[in-house]
Length: 148
Image (cartoon, helix red, strand yellow):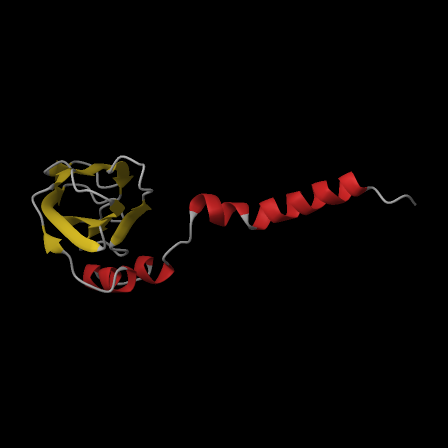
């Protein structure tokens, strides 16, 4: 049997892409923050501190969500050096609905659709230059989306 170097290299690349590439592309999931039972625990597990209120964060979300299974959320800011943007829903079974790590070259704006089980405050938390900022809006849900 002849040694085929190209086959070996292709095999090694395939194996490394299978295991390493998803972590590089998608990042690590903050399991302890997503598994937290309330918003304060999720923030503590993710950042270790509480955010300060800021009027420089724009949280676009409907005041009344007719269907809690699909609630559109857009978070944007004019803060400099934004590192991450997270969305938390106080009364959800999993309060941390979404979290995005941003590169320094990305626009500090994210859009996502979340589920809401019931009427609840929704928090947008932005980490910029190592400091946490947040804004909150109360959203009324008429039909729950988290199994309710």
